[in-house]
Image (cartoon, rainbow, N blue to C red; front, side, top):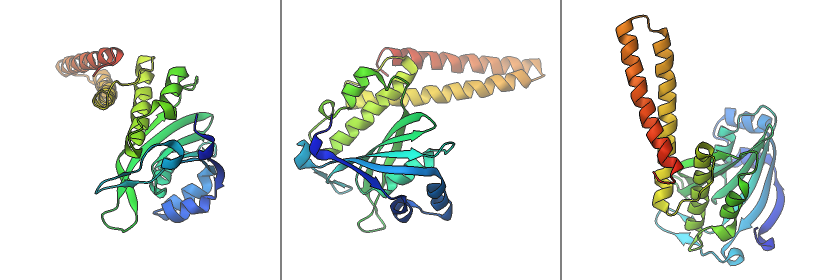
Length: 244
């Protein structure tokens, strides 16, 4: 639901990503071997979308971009997604396709402290796999330009991040529910990440307990496992309730 004036639909030569995004010979090979096609889908400029620019001491958002990245089968996307976000001097909503899997990613940028006129990632890159149904009608409505904050481009990009974070939470709860505020969005996603850490910890404890031959030590590991699982269950219930 982007305005027609924002649409670009222009293929981007991957040599540009090599020139502007590859920090090492390994990155260059990864781009050369893994990237099938990069497409600049849309350019969201203030006069086109009615959202003002944003500037503070750390960043200047003059526009935002929507790009797609098609990867060759078997390519691991994480590093290539990061390289593309680093290479573009504007915040990007990126659609990545590989092996019939679609993901969306977004990140904030800030001015480099060491290189003039360069930008770097500001905070974590958020990438979320799309469910088979495309996230459902509620997600698509929330992601649309009309569903995002419009006070300035920074708020718009943050709105994209919060919407993707809510989709990430929906992978756990089964229901997409937009966060009511910036604070709730941050709290819900932090709870989701903590839940995933606890489940990974539980898996490690379960494996250690299965291998432990000393009864007392096995009992202690199982007690620790129960405590971790109880914390995970509490977090899961809070996510189901829409709060964190």
